[in-house]
Length: 282
Ligand code: SF4
Ligand code: SF4
Image 1 (cartoon, rainbow, N blue to C red):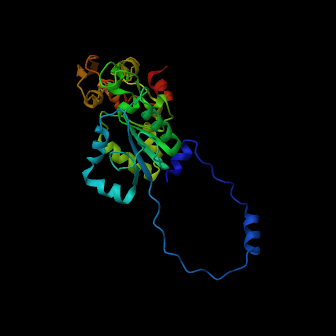
Image 2: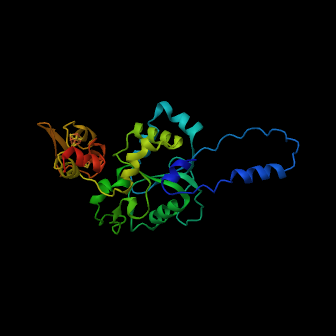
Image 3: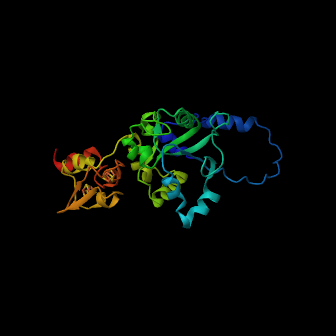
């Protein structure tokens, strides 16, 4: 499963195919045997998906379950959820005694707290056990509102450093949003099952992103002369920090929770560099 994607991320390489002559020799040397009775066709293996809940609010998992029209098909016909504390009762307990299974894809919600040994261990273990890691929601992608955490609160006053997961492990896909839209999750899962790399290109491009802010729109789009005034950034903002007036967005930084949605949803934010230069004449 996900072979096309794994190759795109530098995964397993194909073994060298035998030459035509070798195939012919093998065919000649192999005695013809009576054909065995046809075995019943095995059902194709479904992708094994895990879900890990670090320092998040479970809003992204709830968003996944809000795909009412296709959820039962996805869960019964398309994927197997093999790991997770919320969706299945299988996860590493405090002692790390329970084994984490191999996974094709692991969705990781929430940022990682450096002072929480269990979270760090689970994240590192997930990287070893998963073909692909998806940062699931803005807390995992950019840190989002956990960016403002500074410790000092009971019952864990020492828990003060919350980082996007790409700070500790390589991330293959980023699904931003606070929370991620149910439709985005559904389309990404279907595209993953079908190996649709074109659809997933933006999610792959955002994988290395580790910060977000409303000022990204101002700095990287408007100041570059790329803004078309479409208003998508203001509509994407969950806190109305991104306003819109006189055909241009403006950010109220005191309301911004640093989810990165405005910039990542902007249709001008991921134009290829060559095209930007051509359009701006630089
Ligand atoms: S302006 Fe809104 S959408 Fe943009 S990063 Fe801030 S909170 Fe998120
Ligand atoms: S989404 Fe991008 S192009 Fe559209 S108004 Fe916002 S900054 Fe401009």
